[in-house]
Length: 95
Image (cartoon, rainbow, N blue to C red; front, side, top):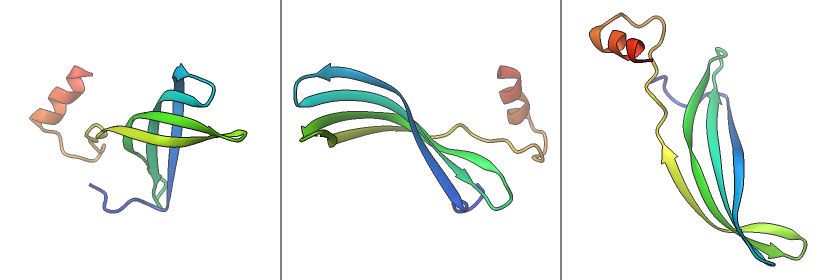
């Protein structure tokens, strides 16, 4: 759509839910988003999804022992400068 990812990218994990816990292991579910910032200042959602992690205690630290990634593609983006068309107008009406 815009070529390669821009100058910077950010990855944020949130909505962390511990779904199982024992003395040395934890099962954790979380949501993530990854964004890209371009030289012209645009910010774009690149990916979103969920992690399902198993953590293991190593001494006083918790480490990721396994990770399952469930990714979702970002929704289609309709730039403001795009010409109007039947699909674009229908998408806007549905919002």
